[in-house]
Each structure stands twice: as C-alpha cells, then as structure tokens.
Image (cartoon, rainbow, N blue to C red; front, side):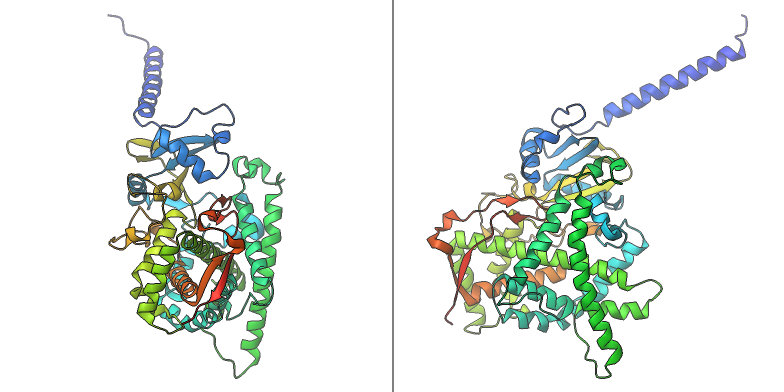
Length: 483
C-alpha cells in the first residue's frame, strides 16, 4: 500500500483538530446553556420590557421564566436571581470568584471609584478600607463610645431632622439639620437626587466609546452633587485640623472623623485626606439614605396599620416605663420593634437589587453564567416570594417573632445589607441608628395623617433610585405623647 504524503496527513490532522474544537465547543455550549429568559430582540434585547421600576419588571418576568433567568439589555447579558435558594448557591459557591463590580460611569466623577469602598475591586486598598471600617470605625467599642452623640440628638426629636443630626453627629459631632429651617430636607434632596442620577440608565455604561463625551450628561450632573457634599466635608475637615493643630486644650471627639484624621497622621504614606473625604462620601450617603428611607417606610406601614403602631407603643412603654429617653441598650428587649424593622427590610430593602460581576464563567443550577455578565439579585422579589413567605405583600411583623432569621447575611431570605465579602461595612451603625430613631419616634409622639387622610389612603408607591424610596413622601403630624 502506497504511503500517504506527509503534507496530506498534516492537512487531515488539522481538519480533525478543527472539527473536534468546533463540535466540542458546540457540545459544551449546549450542555452548559444560559438560563431561560424572554426572547431577545436584535440590538435592543429586552430593554423595552424593563420599563418602570426595575425590580418590579424583573419580578414579573421571573414569574414566567423562573428564579434564574437571562436577559439582554442592549449589548450586555444579564442573569437575574429571584429566589433565596439560587441566591444561596451563588453566594456560597462563588463569593471567592467575585472580585469587582461593574463601575457605573457616573461614579467616576472626581475619580471617586478609585477611592470607594463600594466600587473598588477586591485589591489591597479595598481590603485595607474594609479592615479600617470594621476595626476602627464600626467596632462595638467605637460605636459604644459615640453612643452619647446619637443619644443627645434623639432627645431633640423633630422627625427627619433628627435623622440628619444623628448621622451627622456620629460622623462629625455637628448638626447638618436645623430645626427651624429646611436644611435637613435640602440635604435629603441632594443625596436623593445624586442617587437618582446614578440609577438612571446610561449609554456610557453599555458603549464604552461614549464615555469621553458623556452623551446624557449624567457624569456632569453627578459631579454637581458630589462637589456640594465634598465641599461640606472639606470645610468640616479644615476646621477640625485647625482646632487640632492650634489648641493645646483640644478636646477629642468620639466621632468617625477623629479616627480618620488620626490615621492621616499615623499612616501618611498609605492614607490621605483625599482618602478620608471619599470614604466619608460613601459612608455618609449610605448611612443617611438607608436610615431616612427605612424609617419612612416603617412609619408609613405603622400609620397604615394603627393596631401595629399601638402594639409597638405598648411594648416600649412596658420595657422603659414612663422614662422619655430610649437608650441603645434598651433595643434588645424590644422584640416587636426588632420584628418591625425586619419586616420593613423584607418589603422595602434599602437596595432592591444587588449586582455582581464575575471575571470567569460560573455554573448555577446547571446553567452557565458567562464571564463579564452582570448578575442581578432581586432582593425585592425574594422578600415577596410566596413560596417563602405567607401573605408576602402584607406588613406582618409578627412573622419574625418566633423566627431565627436575622439581617446579618446568613439567611438568604433577608439580605438588606448584602452578604459575603461585600457585606455592608456600616451595618453595625445602621442597625443601632434605625432601631433607636424608630423607637423614639414611636414612643415620644402620637401620630396622625395630614388632611384627615385615612390609613388606607397612604401612598406606598416607589420611585427610581439606587435605594428604594417612596415616590410621595409621608406627611404625618407628630403630637407630643403624654407620658
């Protein structure tokens, strides 16, 4: 038998290799397919099916396509998680793979993403920032030391002005809200506007070539609000530094700014005033917005359900008697109050959708999640999942009275502060502030709705934003309670 030419053998071998690669890849793709989802239209994908409030639109689609779903928005693949079971698999199996977030172009204003504990990738700077927050800013020892600052402001109760000043005193030992003016509402509007802009769909996030021209002006708009807040921080920091440098009788504060300025002196090579300002921007916005929105949702539900308001008042009165001032140490003895906050988080999570970005392919429930896809975990849908919660759309704090579910990231039915390596660093402070402020508002005031409105008339609609906010602010009249 005549031998085949070497060149022909090489050509056959090359052809076999190409066929093997092609069919191997095809077979692999078929066996590791994307999760189910709606038909994706050319160019736009599913963009026009996501009108209105995003978490509601995604929840509606997931009822058809299941708790793990794939969609496409313009040129970007998105994987949607809408059940605690799938969320648990995602977070427990792949938390170590999750290293970064896709940074919205808007938060690149003033290079904020290069300093931000929220947006930095999981590098050494990010780890150092989280360590600083955990060990220096939000440790039990530090929060106990600053308790007096929060306590003093709660005594001056004036609804949302109190929230502004509880937050600002914890950070700066200073009042940002004044009881005779609209300054607290102004600050709320600045932060609300900034978060609303960040939440807007931005073409620059889908087509990187457009970032240089910022076609919708979103980065320019966010710069306006970031500049306002950074200027406030600049003035406070400058004044504090002058006091520290010039006064021999300087009295140290127990606030977060004092800790950050200590670090700028001790670690000059790795920590700067610029670092401090951007960390304050992250933490102050998060603390202020989470606290105001959650307290507002909780009060709205209590005013819609007066029997639950009365139950909370009775519990507080039985625990602290006729004492006017509630202390942080009282909170653990108020299980119904704790249940009210959990139920508020279930129905109105501060961040309704968590985003994740994986730099390698991962597999969930036998489906492929391709690298660089955006994974969105719909906390709003998980909190209203009828297979997990009875009467999921009703405000029923009692469901948590005999439940071990907490908000610390261990129970995937309730993740208001996220979970894993990216869990909210400010959670210890947020929990203290929320419970203290809400308990004080319930205990010290009787409340009635404006203009004779009936409880069922309270508007509970939401508006677009990074955090979950009421579209129509609650309008209620506080009447000083008789002790």
